[in-house]
Image 1 (cartoon, rainbow, N blue to C red):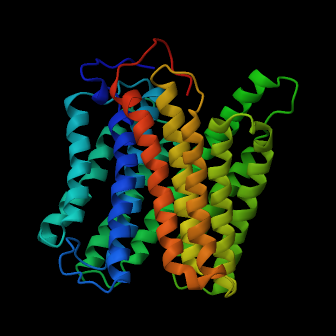
Image 2 (image 1 turned 135 degrees about the vertical axis):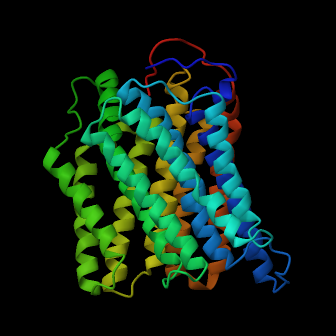
Length: 404
């Protein structure tokens, strides 16, 4: 891995500011959302709210294009140099890129006091700026396997652009449509990256702890079916297709990804939280796709339950898993999850379970379930932020290639 010219450790690699930024914003954005829920429940005035438009739309947008996008940026800015041998983004260019992301978050939070003509470009500029750096690095050693992430960034930028056009009534669609598209695009990222790292890290763990045990099994054809079925399902959600067709697409994606997950032998990693949490995050993707199949064909659950299983459970857990592991490996630390971090892993899944399954099971406790889920989410990422602040802000403690 190319070694950056380190000055300030925090800006020596992309994962440092963006992983800490993602975790911190996960807490801040959820706190603002819970504050609105509490005010709404108390029938108090909402005139002071700094967010333009419906707060639940802001919440959904920021979870996708604020929190998750920062995690994607941190991952790409660290992984791509490893893939291509490019010099990593660091120093002043990284400071500027992080400031662009941060400015977008401030603009969205203060959108009631800032003209929409300014909020939109400030929020939108981050993905193209990230894309320029990632493109430069990928073109050093271009492969179809990795160039797919440029298409991912284009899709995310298109979705966010569509959101702002819809919010300005320029595009005649619901603002939830591009947000949902953005979320499902990041689900596709999880399917791609999960297919690379989950069996690989599981193999490394089992090879070290149980070398005679069966190893994770990977099938190129199954990988392709899992990816294509997930992409096809995501595309179908953009159109008013018949419910049975959407349900069938979601079911195919759920089943193919479930088979993939079983073959990765996650049940053999229960002695290593930093490994099993990867399987847990992927399991939530399977659950979310399964719930979507049910929501499209029955009245048992709603689409919102599926969205939160995918977003809170799948993306939230996988982001926490990758950030916690990569931060240790890329700073020269042992790949062992600190005790409190295991609690954070559990809290994210509890948050997802309460939000996805609580309302349909006990609708009379809807508000309490929403708030409890939000508090668990905040606690999980607060734990990460506290534990990893010194890890992400201090110099690497050993030399050599990271083991993440």
